[in-house]
Image 1 (cartoon, rainbow, N blue to C red):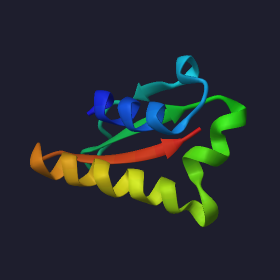
Image 2 (image 1 turned 120 degrees about the horizontal axis):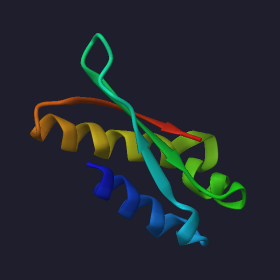
Image 3 (image 1 turned 180 degrees about the vertical axis):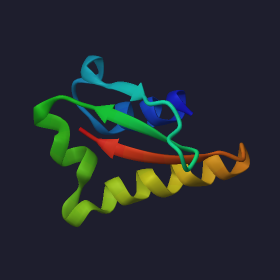
Image 4 (image 1 turned 30 degrees about the vertical axis):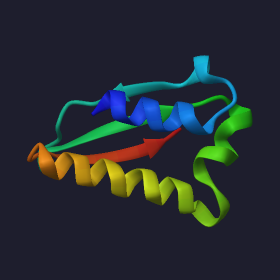
Length: 77
């Protein structure tokens, strides 16, 4: 799951070395939170106009999580 998120983010940003993902332990509801970190200059590219790209990233990640029978959430920091 982390590799998928990193590959999607690296395709969007200009500073590929600044992309990192931090994974939290599952909470009491069984949801694992992934924190995507990108360079300050690339935040707009990852979020997109009115958050459309961020929503698309979350949809793809949720679909991949469904295939693995896990629950996830993606935070963009």
